[in-house]
Each structure stands twice: as structure tokens, then as C-alpha cells.
Image 1 (cartoon, rainbow, N blue to C red):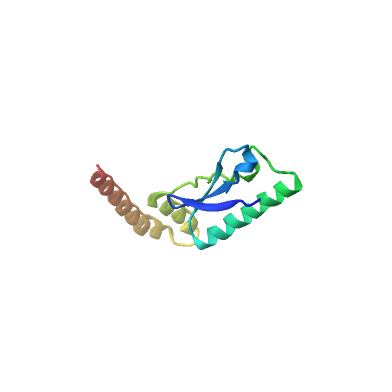
Image 2 (image 1 turned 90 degrees about the vertical axis):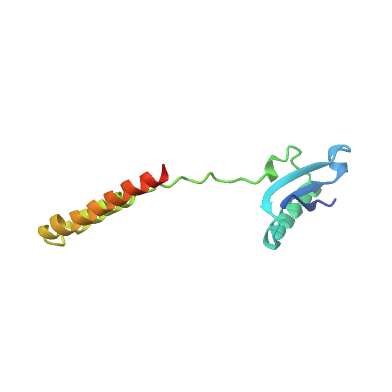
Length: 123
């Protein structure tokens, strides 16, 4: 019983023998690009399926063999102004107050002006 790996539109998929599904051809997308590394992964998955068939544990729903992906957690993005504010809070106890008031506030104003001009360009 041979499970084949083939390419469809640059993506890998498993091809099951007709004998497994009463004369119907079945495919399972591996959701992998056709690369040498991914072909090795595909072949390993095919061998796993073949072993399940031989051992009598084959999942005819194919759910066991579908790729499982954890959804990517969306990380919070920070603006430059937010990062600058955090930096100023961090440095506040380490520098003179005059430095924060004079130098850091000047930089903050430049960041705000840059952000405003950038927003206007995107409109």
C-alpha cells in the first residue's frame, strides 16, 4: 500500500490509493510548499499513514493526518511615541530632571511632529 506525495500548484499533497476508498481517489493537502525539506516531511507523513494502514489504525476521515497549526498570536505593536515614553520613564530616575524636561521633551515633540507628517502622507 503506497501513499504518494505529489505537487499541485507548488504545494505538496498526499495521494491515497484507490483501494483504500472503494475506488475513489483521495488527496490530502499538506499545506507545505514544494521544497526538498518539505518533501522529506511529506514522505515521513506518508510512511506514518502506511504504517497505520498496515496496523489497522487508519483514520478514514483523514483528520489524524491533517496538519495542525497553532494560530499565530498577534503581538502588540508599539508606536515610536509609546516606546519613547517607556524609555523616558525608565531613564527618569537615572538622569537629572532638567535633562528630562529639556532634552527628552524636545525629542518627544519631534517624534509627535514626525508622526503627524507621516499620517498626512499616508492619506
